[in-house]
Length: 269
Ligand SMILES: O=C(O)CCC(=O)C(=O)O
Image 1 (cartoon, rainbow, N blue to C red):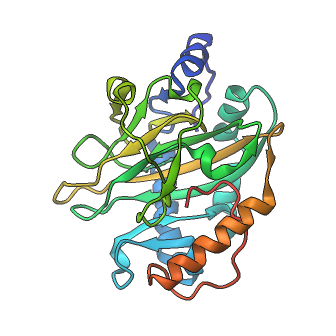
Image 2: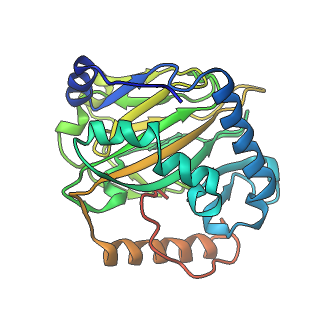
């Protein structure tokens, strides 16, 4: 992992824009090792996971896997990746103090099948007071407009929480209802990334992504969620919401039989 120090200029830019690009955060052999572990996890662990933690574009097609939740709960290698080392250090720096690791997710948009990610603010899902949290989006492939790079609305973290409502997108159940405003269109930027690059955004920053319209390019990423220790979760509201959502998804046949539903800290499902 990179021996990495955030410059003051990077911090200033993060505070002003609500996101930050850290190029080549992981490179060379370390990146190879990380990708191998993701592939091992998908091969060995995903088949035994409960349906609310592994989502598919098409439930009957294993190669249409689109999202994994809580990887750190299932595998010590990923638990360490989330809770120790460089990713956590970046979170501590940007949140200016101790953090609580929330979730380690896998996001995939399979070639020619991966669907768009609706515009949303992670803070709407997290239910925190104060809303002090960040998400890191770590590219496992080279990603651009064709295979669905992340798009951020610059400065939107400073303009408050927008209205959200239910979407039909598995894995991103809430989307902003009045998107795009004129300001959104003006300030939205598509951020390309190469494998190994790290994008970091504030929990209030509006972001979205198009689908993967390429014929054969994968679009895989890991998402790391950290809360500031100052933030308090409304656990009852969060648990009630997750329970309702899981029941709805089960009723609509989007996931298999849902076992006990719990509050999934740090998820944007
Ligand atoms: O991978 C994506 O399309 C979106 C990821 C996302 O919403 C996030 O990291 O918060």
